[in-house]
Amino acid sequence: MKSTVDDGKPGSAWRLLLGHARPYRRTLLVAAVISCVGGLAGLAQPLAAKAVIDALSANEPVLTPIILLTGLVVGAAVIAAIGTYLLERAAEGVVLVARRGLVHRLLRLPVAEFDRLKPGDLLSRVTSDTTLLRTAATSTIVEAANGTLMILGTIVLMALLDPVLLGVTLAVILVTVVLTGSVVPRIGRASERAQQAVGEMGAVLERALGAFRTVKASGAEERENAVLDQAADRAWRQGVSVAVWSSMVGILARLSVHVSFLAVLGVGGARVADGTLPLSALIAFLLYVFYMITPIAALVNAASDLQAGLAAVRRTRQVHILPTEPAAQGAPATVTATGPASVAFHSVSFGYPGNRESVLTDISFQTPPGGMTAFVGPSGAGKSTIFALLERFYEPAAGSILLDGRDVRDWPLAELRAAIGYVEQDAPVLAATLRDNLRLAAPHASDEDIHDVIVRTRLDDLLPRLPDGLDTMLGHRGLTLSGGQRQRIAIARALLRRPRLLLLDEATSQLDAVNEHQLRQVVAELARSTTVLVAAHRLSTVTSADRILVLDAGRLRANGTHTHLISTDALYRQLAATQLLTTQPQP
Image (cartoon, rainbow, N blue to C red; front, side, top):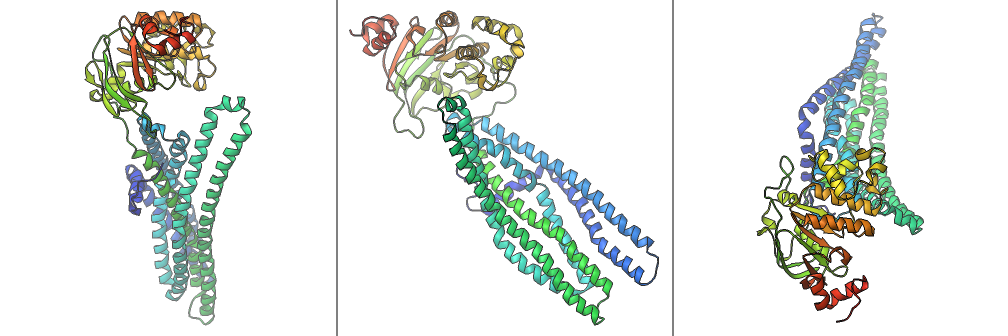
């Protein structure tokens, strides 16, 4: 997924990062004020220490300055704790909003767009990249502002103590700033490469886990381990690159303080010796030099975290600029019309993105409301693609598709899909309870409705074997179920929606002969009140269909009833013969 966010404008990522912080600006402002107060309490500590030393030198009571110093130390710690809590709370809010936004966006991606992306990389953007936003959009901004203010405050107080020593200190710091400024951009580039590498590793891992049983059955664990090791190694190398540049910035920051201390000690010691500077002033100045360690470290960390945050902003933004389907407004869409729907394809052609060859070429047919229409043909003939176009998972390259005489592109998408029940070829089952799986497309279905579809799809033999009945968790992808059970769950889920158009894509391919026969009876019953379209390799499923359309290499070559096609179409007769539905493969 290429970045198209910044268009060469560095300020774009900054605006996006600040946009994440904007909803929490009041909390951040309060936290910044509290942190600033804590910083001021810290700035006063060297002056209080100077007062203690002066009192000791003059043989005066030291109780009051010691109490003042103690109060400043304790107060600064308490204030810092409150400020930290507010920042952490705001940071968690940033992550929550960012993750919600990404998840909502991902689930509204068009199927065609999702097909070209890597799920593992998308998961990395939702998890690890949003975590990087956590610090960059909140505490880093506050720390950078407070660090700057504290350094300016420290410089003012240093100037009041001794301008000569201040000049020495600033000269050292200026050299450090110049060197650091050349390193920080490298951190940003390294951070983005590191996050991309983590995303690639997630994509590789998702590939292996998605075919977990196949990997084991193929004895391919070591080969997949090698691929994962390479991805992990790339992520490690990029992470080390970030660590190198970040460490270099940290070294420069620490060197600036230590060199400043040595320079101030040398120059200041000489001035104390010749009587031009009081010892207490030198001690206070040295304390301020050490005090600068904290704000300088805050600025250095802020620079590193901001670079990582800007890289995360660019990666998450790449998801936000992807095209999406319209969001459903309010309650789930309901079917406004009643009765079975009619379907018509007029000169429809289609090819999948990235493929040169067309999957469908000049397809035209009509099905009246009600009844069962079957699509048969060799693998790759385009049967499943017809269903995908009806669901508007893809748009046709040419021609029009009508539902009830209305182009599907003119239907509100949610309303169109509410009218259709779709049973996919692989019959996916979610890692949820059986009840939740059945109610996925009909969230308000009653227990009576659920019981009805369970009986109709012959799932009533499965229910007693589940320890918690309808509330039994089915596990990841329903792998503890048989293929036939998953298919029946998918069919029950579609029926529970009470669709006007039912699409069954190889819906009985994993059923045994008894269950297939029973389900054929259910489909035949449904066809009296619903338009049923069936894509099938097993012709036994569709021999009783009202009409059968024969597809070959993306073209419609014949249509009719089973008996008619046996006598008129060679391809259909060959398919029937190979499945022992006729003994006459030749005319």
